[in-house]
Image 1: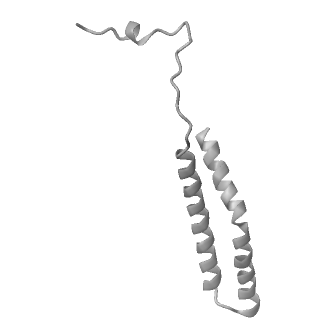
Image 2: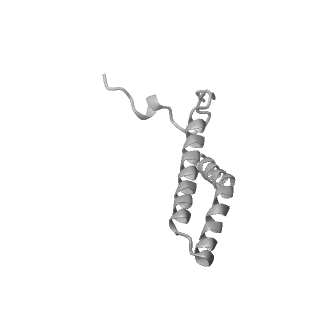
Length: 91
């Protein structure tokens, strides 16, 4: 379940930051049409990737810091042995 949550958070950040990709693509088009430097495109792509990674790390950190208490659940499987039956203590 955690993998699905992490995948969802990464996809959410990618689609949330898609707005930064549009200026990068525009700069790439301007590079080929007007001959501006390619480094503007590279810089925006690096900034976009860094934003995606940082946003994913923040969302994963926030999911770890949840207030949900982990409760102890008793084993209700009647066919499984208890630990004391499987591993008797040697006196």
